[in-house]
Image (tube, rainbow, N blue to C red):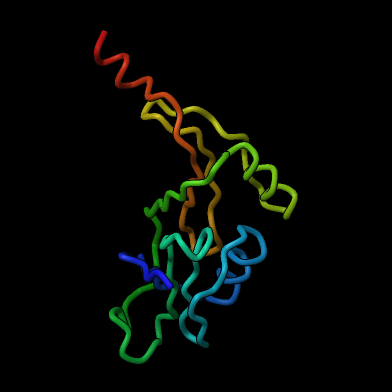
Length: 135
């Protein structure tokens, strides 16, 4: 089994709500689940895109006793087709806007999880910013 190279860790006091949002609404799977920690994977076993959430009172945690997540984080997740994935999420009851084209070469849309993390689902398209810069 592939192991993730990097796992961003968000401290939140809404662990159960966050876990349910990612699994039930966004389609992630749990790779580790404990009372005070959950690690989630996007995609299949060959991919190593994972995100972790920890309760602020996790004994021995890297931020034990520190404040919970206060916002300002965007996690970008590559998908095969942002338009189709947005339709899937809307079907699961997620308030997901229509994808738009970004000048840096992504077609994407964002949703915000219950802890305040912005998740940006994207697929690559032509990079119009690079073309504009060359003109």
